[in-house]
Image (cartoon, rainbow, N blue to C red; front, top):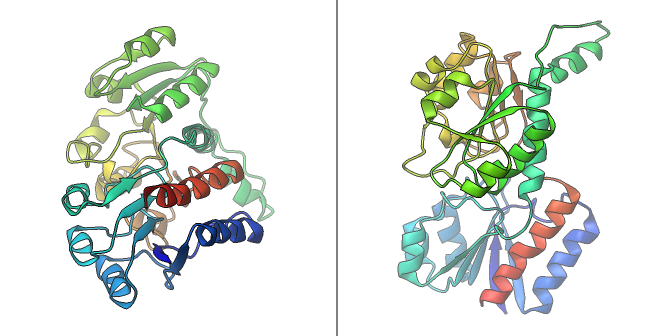
Length: 318
């Protein structure tokens, strides 16, 4: 039997008990035994190495972007053959060290979950602009609250990153008759022309957009691409939406911009440390923030496909 470490107890459990059993059966039928992370938090490199010392690991199913899969993991876990990421972000995985150790890195990039994330992006945009969470929570306290909110229809949307999610968001924005500005390192000229998008500089996008939505990968070039200088360029009526990676934004400077009303508000689905129960932005209780718990791909259909794909990636690799 080969051994796979699954870094979260949540894997496969969000839909129903039978789905989890089906996943466990799939691994068993293909000669795999599962070792679960027993803690309710992400695994450090030390946690993984200790688990490997107790029982040699052939694969790791990485569930969270907070799991630490660094050079020491690949150095110490000598039986390791594949790391399969539940999702597409691999900034927490030392890819070069994996290559040097002969370990294959796989993700669920080939599944169509980008449409699901685009749905949430627009849900957050609408909730933020129309103050839906605040109205709902106040009404539940028997208070008739009718704040003046902002339109989304006909406004200007600025998109950073024109990959699959960025494109899906742009298509939705067209239905709202929005002017769409795009800043991307890899422009798809045909898509831009067909959909009437406008390519522009970072500075132009920030100055003109009513909504700024982030859809970039996190790397050295994009880390903290949004901070105090960028907030200063935005209109005080601008909203920021981040369903990509927390590291794209300087979180301390975002908090300052929200408190000072330098920008109108932010909708956030991703945090530097997850679970984000003690995140400073949430702890402040600001009324110009809408926060969700990294649920961009958390729909029944998307999770069912992703759960099996991340498992198949392991079985097919070894």
